[in-house]
Amino acid sequence: MNLSTVQPGAEPTPRQREVLDAVLALLVEDGDKVTMSAVSRRASCSKETLYKWFGDRDGLLTATVRWQASKVRAGNWDRQHLDAAALSESLEDFAANWLTVISSQTSIALNRVAVAHAGSGKSDLGRIVLENGRFAIGGRLKPLLEAAREAGLLAFDDTESAFRTFFGLVGRDVQIRLLLGDRLVLTKSEIARDAARTVEQFLTLFGTDRTAPQSTTN
Image (cartoon, rainbow, N blue to C red):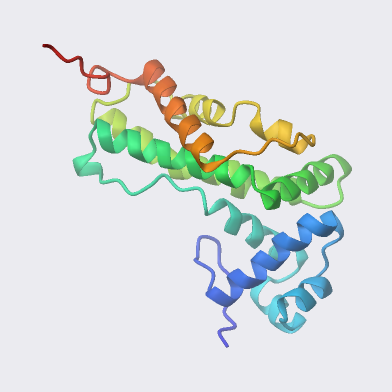
């Protein structure tokens, strides 16, 4: 068995992913009552191995947050061949991935626990979710936004402000409604539609004539 410690930014092994998925399942069932012993039982993995891989409970939770957040990607794009179509596709992929993740029961449970801990001082889970969730996701999308600006496809002064605008257009009130118990269910078709609308709105705000819809003539 590979007993290598999970390093920040490193892809977990298939066995480690099974453990992280077990943590997510326990968070849905038990909230913040997740313990190393419970994870060991659920994942059929010795506590010795868990401590070897993740260090301690906070390390395990950090790796779990990173694993969940890694599912949100900015798509595959080539800086040298970035055009309006590739930009729109990558932004739509990101938006759809993010909506899919935040509307999942695992993310809802994880964020509820993080919010509760942030207010109580029980642990650093709130900071962990913020740094490895929203901030890490921003780090993945900002290079695409900057490349699009260099290619003349987007026009903005501040990358962070542009990202926050896009982030807000994607999430709208969805996440807060879910966290507060709204039984909102997003289907794949609804997510795809919302992602496309998000990109259309974002390009209206920051797009150039190179990303504007082309008119047709008879």
